[in-house]
Amino acid sequence: MDKVLVSSCLLGQPVRYDGKTQTLRHPLISQLIAQQRVVSFCPEVAGGLPIPREPAEIVESRIVTNNGVDVSAEFARGAKLALAQCQANNIRFALLKESSPSCGRNTIYDGTHSGRKVTGMGWTAQLLEQNGIRVFSEEQLPVLNKVLG
Ligand code: SF4
Image (cartoon, rainbow, N blue to C red):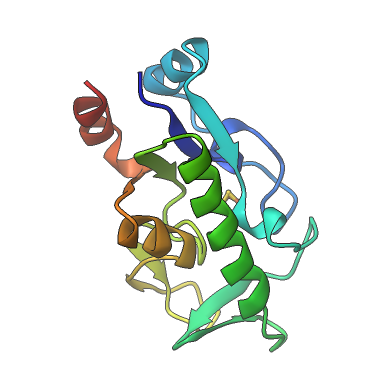
């Protein structure tokens, strides 16, 4: 049975920039955990960023914190490590947290740190999709359920 890479914050791990979780309670998650099909991953922590950390947003081809620090290298490293994790586990599907500059599948914040969202993908979501791994957000659980079969 297919394993799924899942954003650690959705699994209740306090890895978000603010040190909190974003726990997703859903029967599909419980089922995947029970079947030992979940591989938990946080690209930002894997890429070397601390918890907590300053919020960051994508600004053109860079990722910058609200204090103007360029954290592109850490985000890029996290994305590469996420891909490596998928490849090591033959993972073809990922469930990632919407709107994150790493994990966002369909939306991201607009780069002005003003809370506005625009259409776009986080760097990890983008790299996974470019390498044939299908990425779904927590808003697309019924579709993920269908493709997992
Ligand atoms: Fe969650 Fe992804 Fe942000 Fe880590 S990088 S806290 S897994 S949304």
